[in-house]
Length: 111
Image (cartoon, rainbow, N blue to C red; front, side):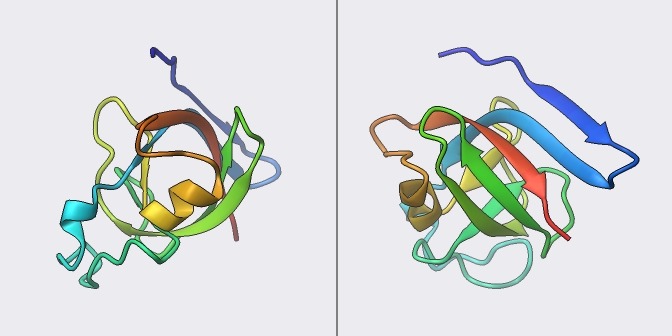
């Protein structure tokens, strides 16, 4: 599965959005410290992003299912091929299964 990444920013409306792929944050990291200092909990709606500030809330929409969830960025990651790594519960909410591994998403930063 190959996706092209698009990054755009609507300056006048102060909306920041990105389109790319989301991957599932591995359960093997459960209990380990994230960049924010908290422990990774797969049942919380959290995510890892390479550059958004920690604590940022983003709406993640699966472009195949049109399902969305709001997550909080609490870790660094998703370097390279993926735009964002989602916790297990967040991924399930938008229809991303471990079998798929990744899906095409749009993320929108919320105020």
